[in-house]
Length: 401
Image (tube, rainbow, N blue to C red; front, side, top):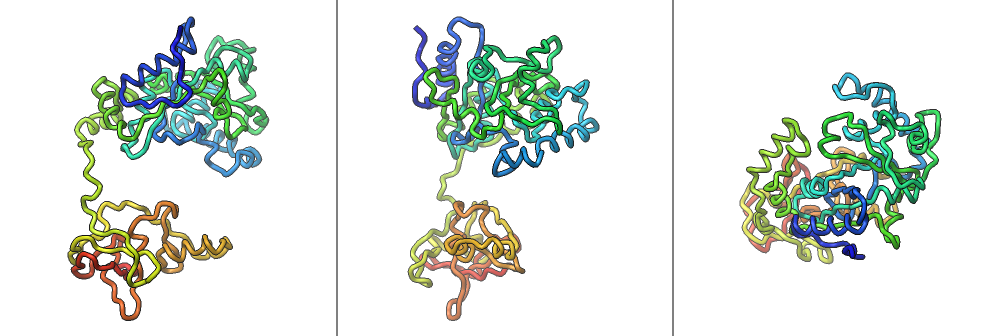
């Protein structure tokens, strides 16, 4: 009797764990067939299965109404031939669409691979070990049986494919500027290998319709054909090393000089993380200078000219103050800009998202009778204006040198 795939997301702590779970899935889904699941690696476990085109606007309806996808396809096809030796032989819409996805243009395609270990590498390769990763497994035949009423996956642009087969998937890629996308649910398709990486990565795709949730609606079915394997953050590094030791690295999935260069770099990069307290010289405490508010205090001596927040890499987003004023924000939202922003030359500098406030954003400003002891340099790195003793509150002059 085939092993049952568990109802909860399995936790993967090694390559061996992953292969065991992948074998369970294949055995349950295809016990008597020479077929295999498709896999998709994602560096963050909480990410949904959302193609790039959907992220361009707040609603997909706006993308359809403004013919944004048609414009993107037209622009790519017109400009692509001069940039690459890899291009479709003719005007086949599917081949051009696969090529767009391959080079990162926004489409309704979602990348999958028939190589389980390739998907696992994609899940961990760009994950620094700060968050959980995931590999999704998909039964593309069951998906198409449910949506297309056909237990098969069609390569729509391959030679020899019947007109009937082409017609069955054509509604998912309407002729640009002539037809409107009317299909809501996604289907699975095989690409033509129009570029070497598509072949090397054993690429396959789901193409999504007008339903923003797409594949997510199929999670939790009695006969599931979509399954998620989670790699905890503390195992990302060790799994990456296991894969590299097994011959799965950048040069494997990107077989060119760029892939080789990254593979060599990874081989000689120290992956050990320093303890998080190293370089930290300040922390948050109730402010003495501004009672009832939070302040920043030195926990060790900060020498004159020393950076107060070494290791902080938070970006600053500069907005025109008029843009914020015109937004007519609720008072609570407006107060975020008042409390946690820099102001200079009619612009407001703030975190790229207020949920990402770091210690430096809690600095309190100098005021009469309370002089500053830190000040930002031209790159907005706060540096001590004099020696600051442990327990002393950091007070800022926010005008950069």
